[in-house]
Image (cartoon, rainbow, N blue to C red; front, side, top):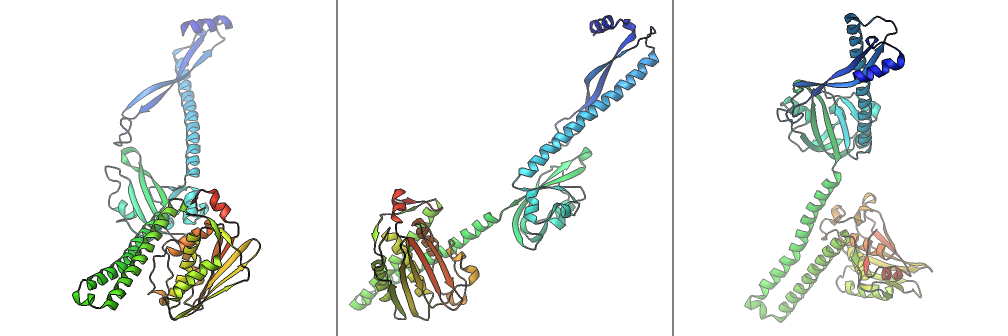
Length: 459
């Protein structure tokens, strides 16, 4: 340093006693094991920010008072420089936090110790339905209003009970959140405390996640278990009952009874096999693909005639009618899968017409596609449920249909097969006036199926 000062003095023509160097030093705090134990600074370190050189053109040297005044000036300069650096760091840190809040898919809020909202991100505004101007400075319990609570306690209750305590553990809360417009959404919230000196609560950070899909998955799982166990139990119970009857010597002496019971066992076994096939198809569809066995030129009029003939022999209450336009064309498709489609539609038309009546199966054609319609005169489908009936495990809940068995997989698979053939399916219905299911299929659909080498992916 002395050599540097001598060099400066020589270049400026000043005596060395007319130059003074003033270090700009600030105190730096050091943290011991923070924030794991919440301990605050116990020691300080000095940091050199820079050096100020003071030159005097007069011949007088710097007096002790001069040096003290200049030292004070250097201290103030060091504080100003350090504050500027801290401010810049704080601005950069705030920008980083803003960026994180902005891109987070989860809702994030910052609460003050009084539980008023200080900051919240766009995702939380979208989730709750509040605007930023409305939400900021509002109490937490106004923004986070529970319609139904699934956890033991809310944030307010936890704070009243001493949270966060000595271990500073996060608080988990789950329930149904009432949004600004009155609708409800299922969420989970993780609260984490931000502590200051002497473990004073500065802020609470809340991370809010929409768990509606997880709830829906749980509900779907429960529905699956309930429906499938019931549908499996019924044919198994019938088969067991018939088999136990056949074991009785007196029953075997009646050939007509034996034939009737064996026929029942075969029919229930087929029903059980169909249920298992539907479950396997549904699992394949969820995995991303549905297998097709073969693609060929298919006469839908003949295919539907065979299905109608089979069902006509099983019901006396219903009259099944075929009405196809003349010279109805063939289409390319998988006969087994398309038979599954119309077997399901005709079966539903019969099941959901408990009072009997006519079931019409009509076919019309254009140069590009064919349209088939299955019309019944049954209980009908409410308008708000007409899209949902194609969802997995969904069943229409009307009093007239409560006794109808089924898994809720049939129309789900039907739509997948029709879409895989490049077609569409929809329903038109009024409650109590029956329903008509329409299926359109392109006449050249087989080209699409063959190109995928036997596996259809539902898009």
